[in-house]
Each structure stands twice: as C-alpha cells, then as structure tokens.
Amino acid sequence: MPSSAHFGWSTGVPMIEHMRGSTSVEAESVSRAMAAATALARELRLRVDDAVVIHNSNRLALHLLPCDVLARVAPAEHEVAALEVEVALRLGDTASPVAALEPGVEPRVYERDGFAVTLWTYYEVVRPDLDFPGAYAGVLHRLHTGMRSVEIATTHFLDRAAEAERLVMHRDKTPALAEADRHLLLSTLQSAREQISSRGTAEQLLHGEPHPGNLLSTRDGLLFIDFETCCSGPIEFDVAHVPEEVSTRYPDIDQVLLAECRRLVLAMVAAWRWDIRDEFPDGHQHGRHILSLLRQGPPWPALGPLIAK
Image (cartoon, rainbow, N blue to C red; front, side):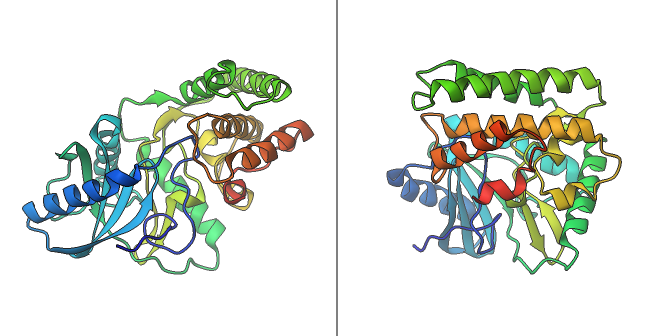
C-alpha cells in the first residue's frame, strides 16, 4: 500500500511528530499493525476497503477508506494514547481548537493483537489564511484558555528537561556527543532550569510541543494534534516552540521567561538528537546546528523554524 509523509495528519509537508528521540514502528510490524487496525475498524462497523500509511514514527498513522477515519497504531507496551484520548475528550467539551476523535465509535484506546489503536476524525487540509501567524497565536491562546479549565495529572515540564539532562550525563546513552558539547548542554540545561524556576510564574496544563508540525489547517479552522506530550508549566514553555512571528502576537507573555524557555527547549532538542535511539532525519547535523546557536548566545531563536532544518 502507498506510503507518504504528511504535515500533521493529512497534508503534503513533511511532519515531525515529536522532537524528542523516537523509533519508527519496525517494518515487519507494519503489516500486522495495519491488519489489526482494519480488523478492529470492521468490528466497529466501519467500512474499510483500504488503509493508506500516512506516517510511521513512534506510531503508525493510517487513513482508513472509504470510512474516512484516521487510525493511530502502536505496540501496546509502548503506547501512551490514553492520556491523549483523555485530553482530547476533555478539551472537546471546552470547544478548544483540537482534532476530534472519531464520533462513530466509543472514544477510547482499543487493544488488538498486541497493538493499541485509537480512531480519529480525518481532516482534509486547506491553505491557511493570509494572516497565519495571527491565527496561530489566536488558537494557541484559545487552547491555553481551554486547558486552564481541565485538571489532568501530567508530568511537569522540568521533568522532561531532567530526562534530557540524564541523557547527556550518561555517555552510554549519547556516545557520539563530544565532551565539550556535553559540558555545554549540561550547563545550559541546568542554568536555564534555575532561571525559569526563579521567575515563580503561574503554571497550567500545556500542549508540550505546539510547534507547526502539530497544527492542522482544516475547513474547521486551525486544530492542534498530538497531545501525548502534555505537561504542566508556564505558557511560555509552549510559546517557545512556535515561530517568532507567532510568539510576538501572543498576548501578555513574560519575555524574560520566554527567552529562558527557548534556551531550555533548544538544549533539550539538541540532547535528544544525540540519543543513541534517535531516528530524527540527519539528527546529528540538526544537533550540531542547535549547539552552534547555543554557543553564539542570545537572542535565542524560536524553535519553530528549526524543526524543518
């Protein structure tokens, strides 16, 4: 069956599902995953004559036809979709700009033949409005407003920073990282964390990675996807993931905190690029580029444009 890379779930621009290190579903498992998803969909009375692979990273994304449903499939033992389903359901109740689960079936994580499967609405993508940065800032603000009304247990954003720090500290996990670069990343992660903590800013539920690869332009407007990265923290941590022309349109941002969050995010992403398990395309080249930016010093660039490099 044909395979293609997509922005979000259904466009033609390459998508980066997560910035942290991840491994794709193994080739020999793809056919089994597809069979599990199609069999499950048929059991749920969805008509499936074909399944097209949209994306294969830490999860397999399939467009099921002609029922026009998106199935996301991953090995059950590695799946964290329950959080994503819960967040999507809760935010859907607040009219937040999020991609919806498939309304024709029970909204939950299904297990079939060793795979965890979730079923989502499939969105055809349209060209964004001319004022895309303003619209992007607006829907991110709406998302954060909706998230403030939702209480869900998640990790803290600094726990994710600590994970990146542990990668750098353990040479067996990042063997190709040069010692000078290792020292730079450790000092950056530690100092940025301390500076952020000292601000004492209010925290809330966050998307975790609301970069352009996790935003769809649809006939229903701009919609966020991929909520398995949700965490708690200041909104500036989320805003650090978007292009600068978007962040300048986001209201009431602590600019000092935003700069430190950008520095932290850059160091975290650089650390993931040296993870021995990382399969990011040209990962070491991407990591070296971010390291050079960290050496140059402020102003720290926004992450958004860098994920496409």
